[in-house]
Length: 313
Image 1 (tube, rainbow, N blue to C red):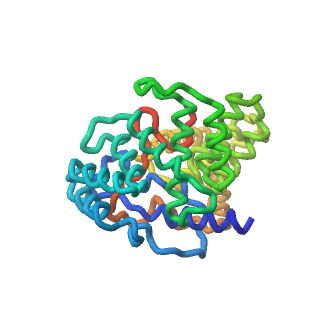
Image 2: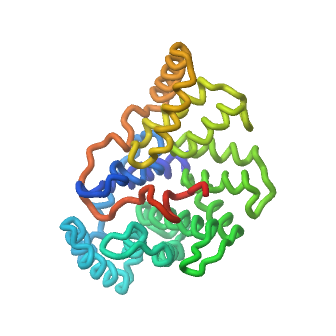
């Protein structure tokens, strides 16, 4: 338990990579908000302070901040050729988001897989470990959905194996991806109990899609007890844990469900959400922090394969 708490504490700190001021509207807020666990007292220096930001990586960061993606890509490739596999993680984001290059999910998958192959449960520094852990989930997403343009076929067994590895390390998006595989019977027999368990674990780390999924279950009385007030309360918490640009559907759905409650019921939902937020020290969320400019562009909700880690489609 202490190990999991330590990992989730580190996850929050890795979320200190901020957006550039000129980012696309859909990327406002921090795309890694999906990784943000409850606030922890555990502290480490920001990722930007560590030794990976040297030589070509430093030049790549500077080029990116100036909007010179072509040069950033050149320096990242040089860093990768010199053995800095972390550069592949950033190249994956650049190709996924189409920054300076056409969107190419196949190339993004290739770069994420390069990092995932370096994953080691015990042999990596904490911050580098988390980058490799994130890459595992992104590769799992690719195997679960397939990437037709790159000739990557669906492989539920591989996806399940990678999700399991990352989920048991506390990665909420992996937990959510695993839950959906149990719900849909992908590589395993459908198991709603296991699915709900993994969704709950992801929801406790404020992963908005997991909170929204639990809310839908509560509203419909599917898998868990029906409770419309509790469902709206969970949607309120989900919106506090993200922002509308990242998850517009969640905000729209909250408006829709809230409109079906009486004023008294909605007040109850608000009170319930506030109590939950207060009891979990969630008043300061990742989405409300002041943004700063730094490489890379964070993973964000985009059209295509990588809308988010642990996507539901």
